Image 1 (tube, rainbow, N blue to C red):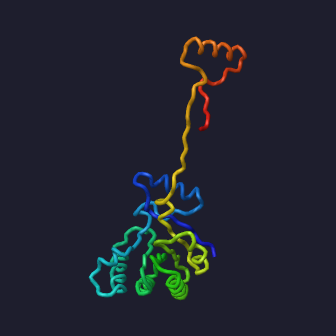
Image 2 (image 1 turned 180 degrees about the horizontal axis):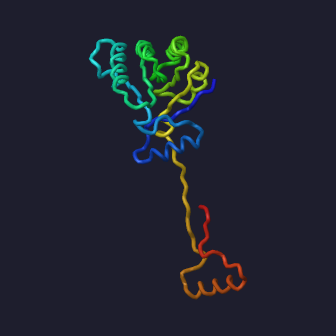
Image 3 (image 1 turned 60 degrees about the vertical axis):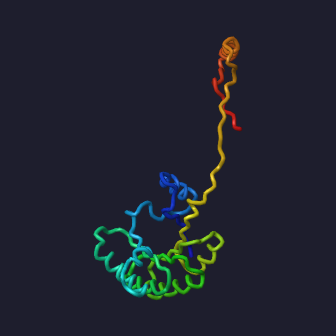
Length: 195
């Protein structure tokens, strides 16, 4: 099964468009550019509810969001455990994000989702490193999102030195110009030379 490698919104302030572009050029996929691209129900939305159990807080949060959702934009629900997952699946959400789950829990979650709602897009996020990628592919998830694609990038040291081929002495400059212009192939006054 193919698996998408996705970035997150965790980018350098002011550099989001450029960093997201770099992710695409590198062959990965962009998740969301802004909060307006897709609703993502996160643990804070769930924990803000007054219910006692996590599952009930998830149901309350999703009920409120479904009621208030005016625009037809995408919806993804972040779940931390199987209890929240089952509650989210009751609402037929199109995308589920399994957050900070180990491989055993991911396997159980994928099994539940594929049994209840086989078309649901399953994403894994939270502390995922590249060495886990093959395992997650075998488990049947659709995507893995990694904040490190933009937050832990090492920059390339690039520099350019400009040198004038002639000295600042006027006499030398005139002589240089006459010498090269008479041949009809006057070189540029400035040469670019890599360091």
